[in-house]
Image (tube, rainbow, N blue to C red):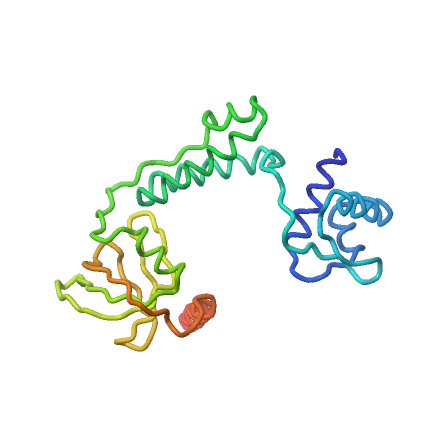
Length: 233
């Protein structure tokens, strides 16, 4: 393993931990000696990496140090291409264009031979079949409400043809092969609810944010789903 690859692996390993990790554990996972680990940490710190800690205490990488895209491995680049192709085929127009733009930016800073190989990778995404129903509401508007933590008044047509109006707190949008699932806290039902995005008839953001942070709501929603799965196992 080259030293450059080893330094990159060390950075990636530190990124996975929010709290200090013992030097011995880092050295063991990288299959290097403690002495080599200390030299590598010193080298990264000299290059601007915000690594804090000391022998016997542990090390943690603070936010703010960015790796250039050209440091991606071949498999990481293939994963990006495959993910982009999935988004282009399965997501709405705005998100598909954003994914393509992101890949173009990455390609622009890669070595020429690597960049030329991105589009010719043999990883393909099969077309969606049957075709998804086109939503009446732009999914980009739903994503914006999720990001802004905005309350929304929406009309929804259920599978029985009954339309209801309700105020919801949108917290997530699930992308499945043939359906997009909107996850919300529903003020009408005072609980979490799931709605097919293609059956949302109208979408009107309100001039107020919902009272809880989306991250906290999402954590509660996940806990409820885990409890339901455990109950039926």
